[in-house]
Figure (cartoon, helix red, strand yellow):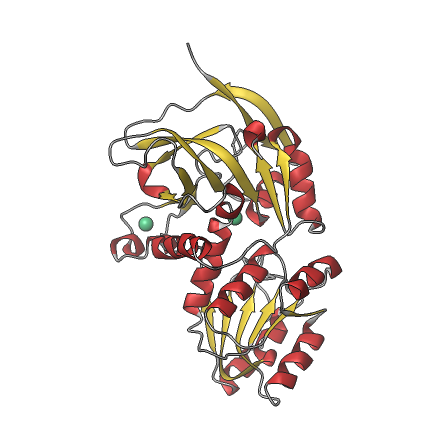
Length: 341
Ligand SMILES: [Zn+2]
Ligand SMILES: [Zn+2]
């Protein structure tokens, strides 16, 4: 008898169908995970809105996955263990893969785009993409591992020094997590620019300086640096309206880290980059070590309890997508298959 499950299937522009499908049967080396929560991010919105270049109708999206092992494989995590996915699919053959940087694989794919994702009761994933989470880390915390790994990678690539003044464009989940990781790493004043008032309040409640717009960010940064500018600037907004300000708010010999994925080429003040001899760094997803570190941070003393989350049942996946697109009321929107709290 075939076993079935509920899954959210993307069927076309702004159409997600929750239906009964066959439960995945793990092949050799795969683990069956009963999904607890799935985080919804900008990539998922792009898929649902039909603007993700690789997504094909019929896909089960969802790559920010936490769940419990339901069936395992030799060398896999034990049944009952809580695991998070490192959802990258790499080719193993390109130069990046061969030289230990498979996170920038030329053929990089993602579970939830190029293979079935976690918006379902169950997902089958290779044992090697699963990280076991310690018992005292809850599913609600663990679901943040994937976006937190993005922040860990960005801060790692920023070569942050203790006391650095940090500017962050964008107070969404990635911007706030970048700020939290930077603070944990010893940053001094952290200023976040965010147009949404509710998100500014969340950032302020978390202890960051939260301002509206590039001008206000520049003023705040110049104020605390005697007119020098930020040591480090993160673009976690990905919006063309702020890119010309990136070099401006950053000090001479400062560093600019592009975390957000821009939808199209944006204007940069490259003269300022030259004159101020700044470093401009692109970052893509995270390494295996970044994911491990994100788990360790959550297991340690990184407190994410101040991040407002909202959870929707799988049947309300379209409402969840809408809530994530609206960006107010919850910093992170989750879908919770199976009705687990
Ligand atoms: Zn994502
Ligand atoms: Zn590769």
